[in-house]
Length: 444
Image 1 (cartoon, rainbow, N blue to C red):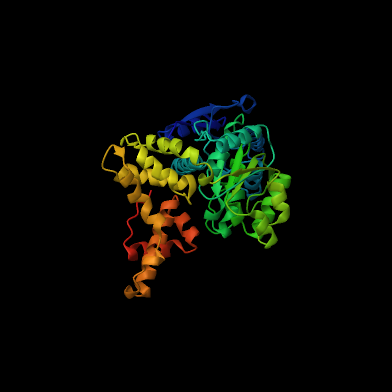
Image 2: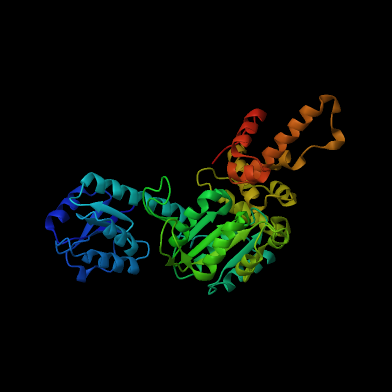
């Protein structure tokens, strides 16, 4: 974790020195005793005294909080006061504070609060991948060149963008490339299908302390975290109709109201949505709002499946093999030919998984034809109905086929949750079937 800086705005030298002594190792302090001289930048959180003149009847610190919040949308602000009046605390929250500490300060409580802020930065670092400059599109086929031109044409596009394509075709890579052309700002990604419906509003818009059981502090939503950048919503078709209406309103107004909050704020971010379904068909089935589809699809990119750009397979294979810095593998011509002839139902994601398995399982530095067949043949062959041994009985044959289908799903998907969604069963059911069938599967 990088060093974090806490701005302390207080006119009391004793408070400043006490905070300095209590700071965790990864934090250092920047003090400001005169609010007229607030530093413009260089800090990650601020601790602001509400009564800067020492008079409980005056609340100059609330205006300081408001100024800090307006200048720094993502700044974590902690208000502190010896007056625990409910109205004052509410004014602090409305001005932009996310936490409130009572004076005299409990140094243990301050340390715990800073630990929570550090955890928030770690969480945002996992979701907000602003370092997309190293992302690139692998492939030089005519189809890949078309995709790269389309991405380049979206450089100055501020409205919503829709990316369509089968599962595993590179929709998140495309979104990251679109983002990398922007001058800056965060890139926040969320798989809509992975968030339970009853939690989505809190994750997307955030919530205030006390909004519901377990909401022990204010939480910034993903839309707010993407302010000034891009918000990528994968599997947008998984949104329920009520949530589709809330997303549509956000796209039209830019308003974000945290769950439990009385006031809304304006967020400026570009929404990039992705889907592997035919949204027009879902509209006709009444499962997706037509007005939301219109709003999302002003600018659209369609990613072709890998089977329609086989010229890219060799380049992709060499790229994936080069990702392992410890196991150096090369691929022979006969092995590459097998990969080019395979139909790749899981697209680039499946190819990546196959390459990872080859790196682990192939015994020689050069991958051979038999190495490739050993990985892709079980998932490609399925059950050959012309050679079914009916004497084995229906139960054994069905179990065998089920095991092959599960193995194929695990090979095609990134993780157990995606495989379960593909098979339309619960995560726990999939784990049980993996155990029952004795399937060897390496989780990431």
